[in-house]
Image (cartoon, rainbow, N blue to C red; front, side, top):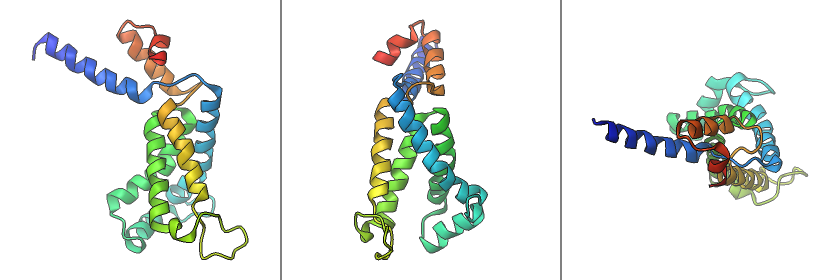
Length: 177
């Protein structure tokens, strides 16, 4: 492999990473990122750690694979999206990937469970289960983060700055591109 080929390969990889971590510096994006992460952390911690009245990892995997008949790798990814994805969102680390994981999780929850219960949440206890309005809301917030990135104070900004430094381009130029 020649130096030119190596440089082209490195440049293409850096462009992909840059697309994943580039973010605006908006306070509203920070708020949405932090909010979604804080909302999902307890759900993920229930499934992984057994905190907040949850059953822990083994029982959650068992429920997904045996009761819901979800393949084990997909069940693991769903749990990881809620736990590790929530932590990543709070930190602003790989925000787009974390948001994508939560979007997929919520879309699957609507299709497999909550869609049949209608739109509204079950505030009065008169439905058989919860509707999907909460899930739609989290998908909407996730889509904003997927498009805009992590916002102000995201670790993604440090990664973008490092990429820009290695490419000798000012980081704020990349953020506007």
